[in-house]
Amino acid sequence: MNKKRFRLVALTATAALALAACGGDKASDDSSKADGKTYNVGILQYVEHPSLNEATKGFKAALDEAGLNVKYQEENAQGDSATNTTAANNLVGSNPDLIFANATPSAQAVAAATTDIPEIFTSVTDAVGAQLITSMEKPGGNVTGTVDTHPDAITNTVKFLAEQLNAKTVGMVFNSGEQNSRVQVDAAKEAAKKYGITIKEASAATSSEVKQATESLVDDVDAFYIITDNTVVSALESVLDVAEAKKKPVMVGELDSVERGGLGAYGFSYYDIGKEAGEMAAEILEDGKKPADIPAAYPANLKFEINQETADQLGIDIKDDWNAEVVK
Image (tube, rainbow, N blue to C red):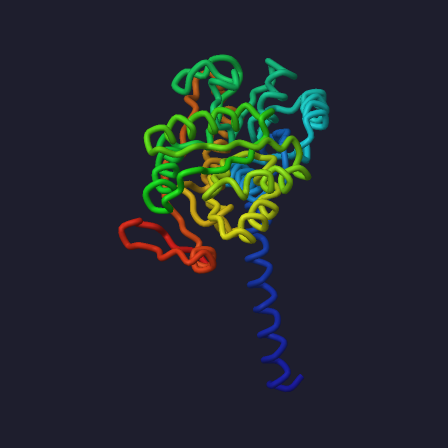
């Protein structure tokens, strides 16, 4: 063997050993995780839309960061109440170690299906009003989690509609069958009294009804406020299309909805509240804590975002004193 060929073989062997060593470390890390207990976790998400999807991602990330080996059984109700109930019963029937419920209807369905399996929720607006927990500080029972409403979000939005957009009449499209939505609409109406705004309502029981409900209001309102209603947010583009044709601004309740074309929102990261819910789940699975002993939590940070492209289309100048984070 000549020297040149020998050096090539030696280098190849050295590289192979290095790769094997690196691969061995990874395999060791993975095997150490796999050597522990495997936890079975059920997930019930009420409908497919970006905010809820992000919350589920955050939940899984927290369990992964905790080093837990988790096998998931996932169900999505696609916004249908009958499917939601069936999916909750299916998950309970599989007897997982814990169930993660994403959105109020799913959290209620799981709570109705079991009092034995620990439940962690997120994307719930009023957990006490939905009868999921006794109080935020002391949940009681077998349920706890993170809510998706900040105490100041609705008031700030109504104030912005009145003082910055000069809206006198605001349209709200929502699913009146969702308890979380009714709570938010009532809060908006209460805030509207202070700022001289009249709220006009239209209900949409399914995503296919959202466009028609929006059209029923568009000529009678100065702007829209779309709260964190799962049915309407899943069909947000229907609202935006109708409003854009009439040059009516749409304030929204989620930062993800600003990315989709809403004018602005006082909101927070759904990934973050999902992740905090996942951290609660890890305490239950790994440390043996009870949901009753883990306080439910509000979103930690509230920020204001404005969509530059939407503002331009509406001829709205973004002011420095809004202290808004401008997207797009």
